Length: 127
Image (cartoon, rainbow, N blue to C red; front, side, top):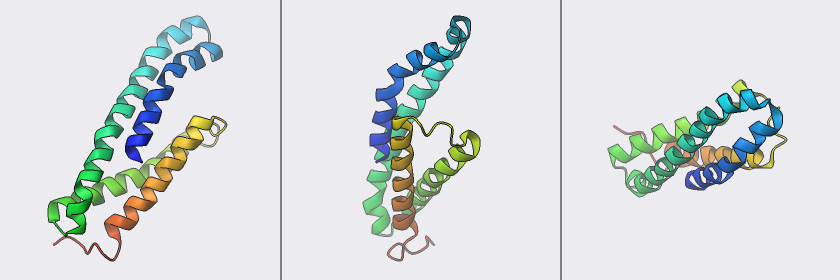
């Protein structure tokens, strides 16, 4: 799911320039577009290895290997914090955009699944 979210992030990146251009003056768009594009690309790219690392560590975490349990728990808590922080910072005003709703749903589902897997009864605390 995290890798899918990274792909979604990268897929909608080309639309950021147009979104900005349609909603601000040209002078503001010239200043605002590059950092927004950089942010969108960076997040999209960083979600790909985050998803891969979660996928890679999961079988070892299930087997009880300490390194993998720690990795999966850190990733689970980090991903679970993301929708909470986004909502606190951004509120509900962005929920009119379908890609934002889809991305938020993916993050929430991934967070719940990761928390259940990382802290569930089949994965005892790492010693």
